[in-house]
Length: 266
Image (cartoon, rainbow, N blue to C red; front, side, top):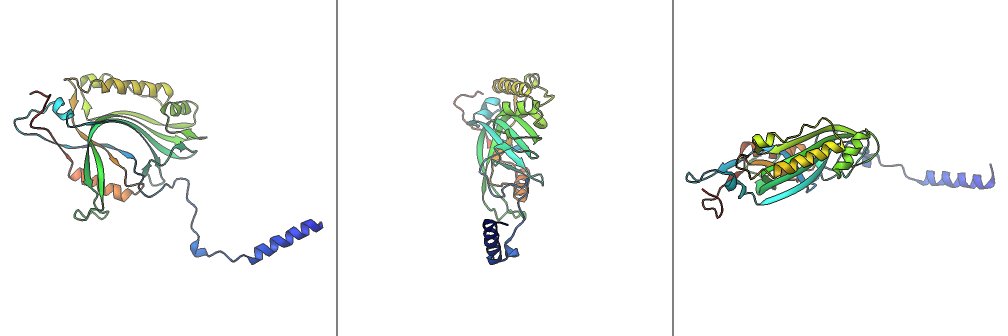
């Protein structure tokens, strides 16, 4: 051993010996690759469409025009969620998909009104809300992909990039095109049937969404308001979200049609 090596070894030994032993009470297990943040993400959280109430005076006919005039907000939203080991989804966290992880990517077009819903306590107490949840009621169209990343990193904010990654076998999963409270013969005739996730299938789905969107005001289109999404105050807190979801099922928000309309007849 050279003089330089001996000095180095001595210094290393001195440093190691002078260090206090770690306090095991303060150590925590490292986060697993499937663990996501627990707190609110304050992003858009899409929901499987839930029924909403529709109120109208006896003298007022329920027409598409009267329903649509109560839905003033038109929005396109792209929501990216990461699925943890328990199956809970945290939206607004993931931007780039990593190998071995599961994700949900949802593109929503909605025409909606926003309701403020009380968030019940986790133990089910209806008299002790712990906050309010902005809840979107209306109609819309949805393109969603459930993915698992097989290799490399994938840009989850770019649908065409996801399609290309699927063709390159970097990701695998399913693609769903869905209407939210919109139906009818002309709608069913243009609904695509995706056989795989690819750049072309995603492009075809986007074209179909544009076509269906143009038919919303057609007299033959059937409109039925739904609860389509929320402002995400849950993060991956599955119990809090389940309590909110159950409260919406038990007492759906109510959309009220106007008695007087400036442009809808009758």
